[in-house]
Amino acid sequence: MKAAVVVFPGSNCDRDLAVAFRAAGAEVEMVWHKDTELPAGVDIVGVPGGFSFGDYLRCGAIAANSPICRAVKAHAERGGYVLGICNGFQVLTETGMLPGALLRNAGLKYICKTVGLKVETSQSVYTEGYNAGDVVDIPIAHHDGNYFADDATIDRLKGEDRVAFTYTDNPNGSLSDIAGILSDNRRVLGMMPHPERAADSGHGGTDGQALFRAVTAQLTTA
Amino acid sequence: MKATVHVMLKTGVLDPQGEAVRHALGALGFDGVEGVRQGKVIELDLADGTSEADVNAMCEKLLANTVIESYRVDLA
Image 1 (spheres, rainbow over the protein chains, first blue to last red):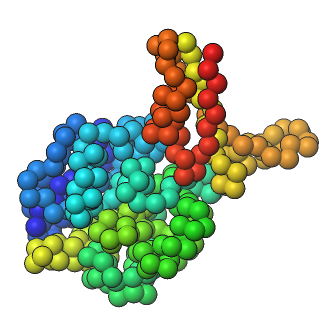
Image 2: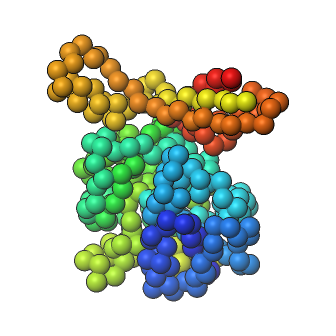
Image 3: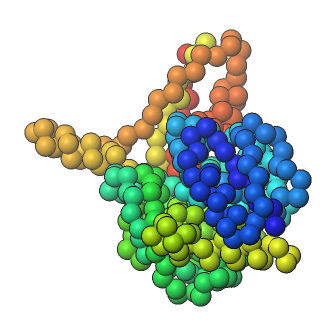
């Protein structure tokens, strides 16, 4: 299974994400924002956390229009897998690959702490290593993680079982406590919490390991 | 020619920054500030002949996120 991790100017979780994929058994290649295509044979693209382009204009807005993002979007449109974490989730909403937007946290503060996440569905390659209803401990680190979408979109996400994770104690004002969502084909996941920061015993928690192991195992046998 | 683009959060989208500014104005003794909405203004220097449709396209594709924001273009 081959993963590509995108690096934008200002990305700061790119190497952590690569380490988490490798630890799960994936082969990983880093790709630069100016690259116009993905390496051959990529199964999944990781869009990492950080502050791409200094969060100028809106978080993720400039990155979403970078050359590599056109290739990532084409990959998703071909049925490829994409995992966007934190700033990566913001980038995916800005490209339109996932619905909604991430607003400034309701309490206005940057929040960096481990939170409880409820796994809402195990029906995806990302979450099938968990059971629906499991509560896992995963860190968040964001200023703009307040998920917003119109009522019809929220209803559709819930109705189609596309809410992957919710917060057990909503830290940022996200509608319906939403922490992560899936695309309509369930192959694109965007989430604000950082599973790659809970993927090694040295991190102080390993609840994120199951995500990387599940996706690597699934895409290896596929 | 110049264009000025005003970008605001849509009505109904919570603006916690505007709300914080409202509280700060109240703390300064300015009574009667019933609401504050914070947006941004983007000034564009454009080649003569750039159409309003072009500027609207810039807003739709980049300057505003129409999921959460509305925009207004003033050409001068």
